[in-house]
Amino acid sequence: MTDDRDPETSLDEWKASMRAEHEDAIANPDPAEDHRIEGVTQVNHRVYFEYDSETDRLARERVEQVGELTDPELRSCACGVRGMTPEEAREHVRAAHEQSEE
Image (cartoon, rainbow, N blue to C red; front, side, top):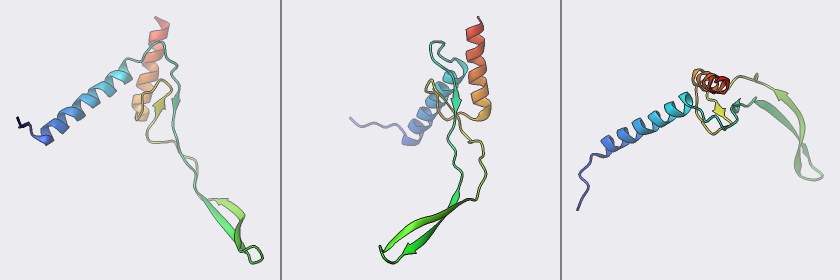
């Protein structure tokens, strides 16, 4: 027996299902969990090295920061909800606060 389903249709259905689960997790946070929003970002540095001919090694000479700290585009919550935009993260935390006030 072969599966006659269109792979593109299956993929679209899976994406819609995952999107719905993500939206539900944002709008309905688990009241038993801790809700702290976090994100990962990096600041770029230029690292200069000096060659030591006696040891044939490169030794770090100095480091210069070449970028500024910026907020990450996507946020996560300590409860496990990942990949939220800043707006979604606010919605998630707001919903958690509203639940705790009830």
